Image (cartoon, rainbow, N blue to C red):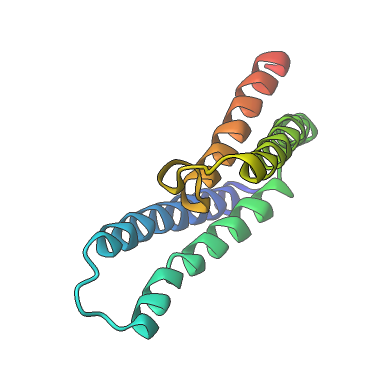
Length: 132
């Protein structure tokens, strides 16, 4: 990867990641006090963070293809750590729903996805410690 390509990749990841985060926070704030906004407009507004999220993932994945072997291995191990934990968490929550009512203010989709990011970051830290 040339310095120019790396710069474009990093700026794309940063810009779209920040845009995704800010749009998500904005939408969540708006949903706390939706006022008289129609359901149609609320659906459109709620889906707006999907575009910057998709662009963030596009740049993130494109950047992975440009990494050297060691960095790819670190990323693979981070994902190999995160995916089984995420699967275990979702299976556990799914089974628990059969016997207890989980509080949607703690265990809905809008809360659980954050654990997936946490699992990936934990895996990334462990893999970096191992190889670097």
